[in-house]
Amino acid sequence: MADPKHDARQRESQRIIERVSQEAESGGRSMLDRATKRARDHVAAADVDRGDRIEYWGTRIGRILSIFLVIGLVAWLINFLMRGGLSQ
Image (cartoon, rainbow, N blue to C red; front, side, top):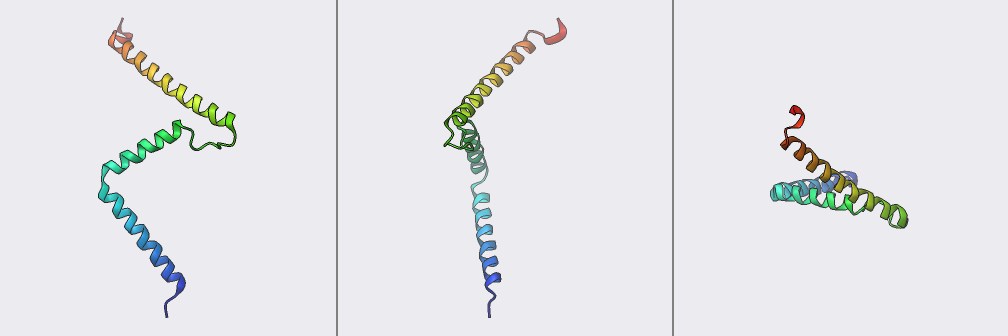
């Protein structure tokens, strides 16, 4: 007689093993795709309640502005280092 709990655990274990093997076969491409999707969802405020329009748009605007701020800071740092940095 088979135990229903044991069968359910075995099916779940098999499903997990199949999923891990599929992800392993796809290699780095899948990891890059997941990272890209996470970044896109973060900037698009996918994790925010869409019912609250002010929070949704405020989050999107804030995250987009932060990207521009980081790009500007990196450009300033590169410019600063190219001109000699603190050695002047």
